[in-house]
Amino acid sequence: MSDAPDTFMSHLIELRARLVRAIVAVLAVFVVLFFWSSQIYDLLAAPMISVLPPGAHMIATGVVTPFLVPMKMTLLLSFFVALPYVLYQVWAFVAPGLYEHEKKLVLPLVVLSTSLFFIGVLFCYFFVFRAVFSFVAQWAPASISVAPDIEQYLSFAMTLFLAFGVTFEVPVVVIILVRTGVVTIEQLRAFRGYFYVAAFVIAAVVTPPDVLSQCLLAVPLCLLFEVGLLMARFVQRSAPKAIEEPVAPL
Image (cartoon, rainbow, N blue to C red; front, side, top):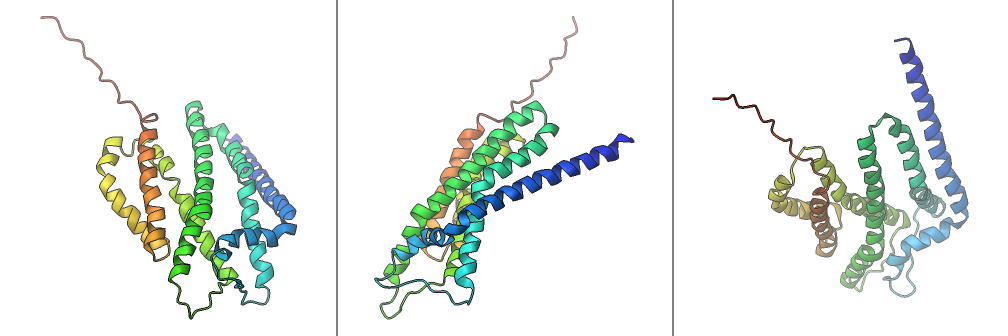
């Protein structure tokens, strides 16, 4: 019992060290990217700028907004760039307390979930942004001068990035539910129709109020659900074998 406080304190010290390393990594990337913060925001705004009328620009309504908004974007990008190292620090802290079979499952899931999140963000930037902005620009009245605010655009972009990044985590969620025995693959297949309806409802709430962006989120959500069902077949728990009782001789 006397070793318990020492063990607890050692865990806290290690946790603090891991957190400090993760924060230092994010700040180090931020310092490197700081000098290109304007170009980074221009890259984020490129899909919107490409659909604006000739000569139109985005605006900044605040006094320090032209400085703060690119800084916010650079800080978020720094976190994404340093995310593999941050996750490694989390893994290094948690791994000693896991069993060997848990390590074999958790590490691939961490790598898979991180990759899927980045894929969702890239899908949103390269496909969803251009499709949604082009659709909105086509329906804008000719009497209106379109000049989006840079701060509102950043908030809009981060919301969609988060929505699509989380959406692409559906296969991981399905795998965890099946592996832990919360549900079976057969139950998820029976729930398929309800999930499709829920996907379109969620897409309608998260995305802008147009059919195109709703479908661009709901359709991948349904497809990723099916991918999760296929992948879950390889990690599902095998049913326990029945114990045969010896038959007494006649």
